[in-house]
Image (cartoon, rainbow, N blue to C red; front, side, top):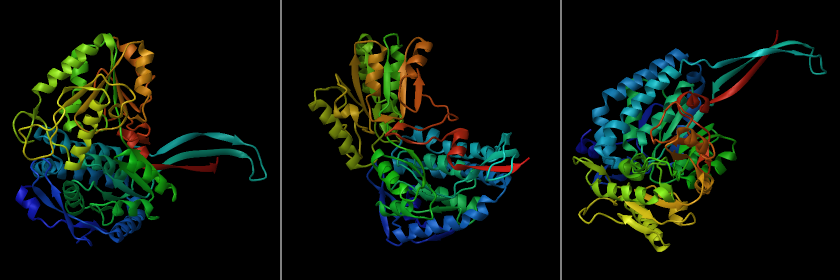
Length: 494
């Protein structure tokens, strides 16, 4: 999709299979690299969000009774349709998010159809768990006998899928795929900063793929009320949210009032624990991914480098050297590795952490501010704050930008583990050691939902989610099918 097409298009919301004009007008979506308007997103009303929830509830009985084969067919058709539209989606996603062309072409869009491919297969997974018969004595409740039983996985119902700005359509596909495969209906509510590609994804699924009316609904808005309406609605059975811990806590509180099923993937403050036998080059390359992958706007990033004193100087020097050669600039420009942050307020927020880290005694070894040659766009240099202490604000709070804090430790592995675990977050931590058995042993002591051993690479079949303030629940692979289902027991006399 060209910039002109996106800007001139009239974007609408999807309710019950029909595209309707937003009740409260539109708002501008701004390209974070150029500060130019990408398009005008729909400003839906709270009432429209409630209508979408009602449409999802009404569509659920029929959709939940469709055969797994039919759901698999539609999900595979979805994968193929997104694959066919990739050339249009990539420039739109890059313009909205400010991700580099490399990230857009390799991660933002291809992972969408990869996830639909995966859950087209997953729709055919068995949903019945056989259980051994049990001999039961006679009770005042019922006669005795041999009781047969099974457990079944059944869909939860109508699911509100609320997603973040960093990977808008990838994250949404990661929710839509398993939820639809299990027979749930959906209300999509993308992040306010970049909803246009998600709207286009919903258009593809509704208009071209042919999901039945009401199975997929889409509501957008620049302010919280539409999302709040979904969380409050009794027509919504589950909320699947990826985003900040602060918002996640409010969703958990509000959702608890109606006992909604919750899947919350929240903030992170990834610890990269570098032991004294670690390979410096491996550690530097992995930790430096904070800078090279979407400007640090990723919750799994190893932003806390907790380094044994024997390797501290070498790792800090390696990261400082790496920062010097990373090109910051226009996402479409050849060789650019670090793009902009999503908005000016977010850039200013990240800058405040950098300034605060320096004020608290940290040393700015690399970066520290906006590039002097970038006159437009929300850019920050890759920044490394060394000589940090565990109690510093920049070490304790999620920054969500191209900032790494380096914390030295002098003692044994237990000291490093204690520093790593001294955090409100527990999403993704890392261990770097030349001894794989040692890395595994140390990794088992970390209080995080995911542990990388000498790598920041992912395995998408693993259960993904966090501990502590990093969230509740797990998805990914077959675990995603479990996340969007309930267990139902059936018992009968044998």
